[in-house]
Amino acid sequence: QAVWAKAAGFGSIDIVGARAAGIPALLEAGLTVGSIDLPGWKNMLSPDREQRLAAVAECKSFMVECSEALRSGSPANPLVFWTMMLPSDPSRTRKENYGYMLESYRELNGLLADLDASIVIEGWPGPGCVVCTPEGYRSFLRDCQCDRVGVNYDPSHLIRMGIDPLRFLKEFGPRTYHVHAKD
Image 1 (cartoon, rainbow, N blue to C red):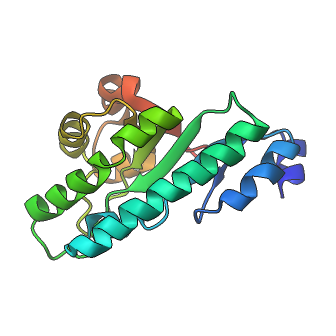
Image 2: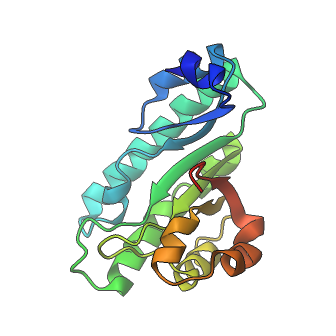
């Protein structure tokens, strides 16, 4: 697949399904890694504290593994992790789920700096999504207190919600670290 993608003119491919093992094949084909799905992102917003702690630990371990694989093969390739802010229990209040999200993602701030990595949030407006509107992004980017957390720009979701994608980009452009190719 990586050889085909390179021959078809792609320069970068996202790794979905949280598979660090796919990094070497992309690099060998002459591609860069666009973003890498964080594992267990839904449990980062779990009402169960033990599930949140386990998800944070899993993410940290995975982030280090990806950094080692990527940096050994392509030290200049940016290390960008993808996530969505969909709670495991969308019936909980938005305030509760926001608190769980903030607690979990703040735990990654130090490691992001250590790895020179970023996290991008896709604003797919699924059930109970906490970060998909300008208000959600604005609040989380402020409260997370980490400039390494930013936006995965996917204007198709904004259009579905009636949000002007150009106005969104004007506000969040400096924190946009990834764009989906379809958009």
